[in-house]
Length: 77
Image 1 (cartoon, rainbow, N blue to C red):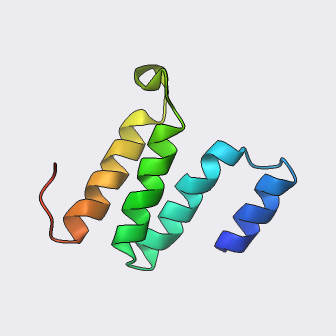
Image 2: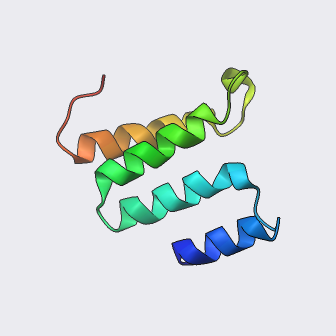
């Protein structure tokens, strides 16, 4: 599914808007646009506050963001 489709689904409330950065980050990662993927995964993580440890997607988002950073040849911060 293309990023525009995800945006369209989110606008129609068929996809939670909090998941939009995750889907867009996945698309950016697939396109080897690692800096954009990292930024989008970071945005998705920020949307989990104030209770991120309780969110079931926390580990997945953190690992996706780490993979995007490592794919840029940068060390984890």
